[in-house]
Image 1: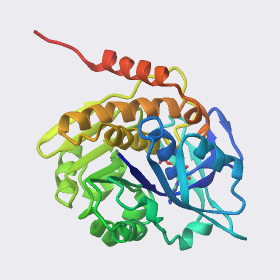
Image 2 (image 1 turned 60 degrees about the horizontal axis):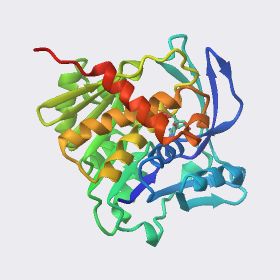
Image 3 (image 1 turned 90 degrees about the horizontal axis):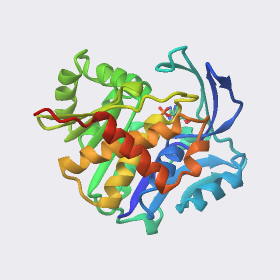
Image 4 (image 1 turned 120 degrees about the vertical axis):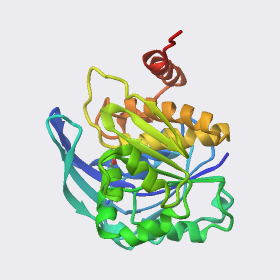
Length: 305
Ligand code: AMP
């Protein structure tokens, strides 16, 4: 089934306890589409970059089968830039710089060939852009998933609440869930957030896994305890790409399949953090993914008679 992803394509500068990078390729939609490319062949990107963005990277996306017809390249303008620094425990980070550049006036254009997409991933951008995408689609996709961040909860709460009424799945981290719901208990937070519109909520807890809330049901997938975590940037987006990519591939949005998607998303995120930036996400093999998913199953499934 076809997947449409809208979000940032960026330059990132990262600092983790293991090292520092200058400007490397990042952006929510970059991670999402790369992760989804291992599941769905009909993978369509809408984003904007400046003419400083390397055409070789567009080639990498296209090499993974990602349709870049909807990637607008603005002449004489600069690509979105984000810099972040991770704390010693790697679970939290500070944003050091956000230069919106082309994202400041991003007006998502949906190519005609993308219309009719069954799965829509609204990656982290301003809620008004996310809403504009929904309004510009001729038919409502079968499943709409949205990611957001503390910035939008803080500065655009009304717009965010408006778009949340129209989505099926919201994915946020635990800190953002608490900020949005004003509840500390994630169970209470989930109840309040589900009342805002989405039928399903995924709360990501970094190295502590992810929770899936659906009506009164809750399901948990752990994160794989890895020997080395170099760079958690993009783990949330990679998770989202694996999750929705798997749903698009299987075209099954039952609760049982959402649980499987949670495991596939977690498996993809576990690869992302092994190297800086998107490096690990460009050359995975099917065997590696299957082996990683099997490790999750072994880690978490148990029987008690
Ligand atoms: P994650 O680690 O999954 O939360 O996502 C990190 C990615 O989000 C980075 O590659 C950034 O380029 C991108 N990003 C950071 N801030 C924003 C923002 N305000 N809007 C859109 N994308 C952002």
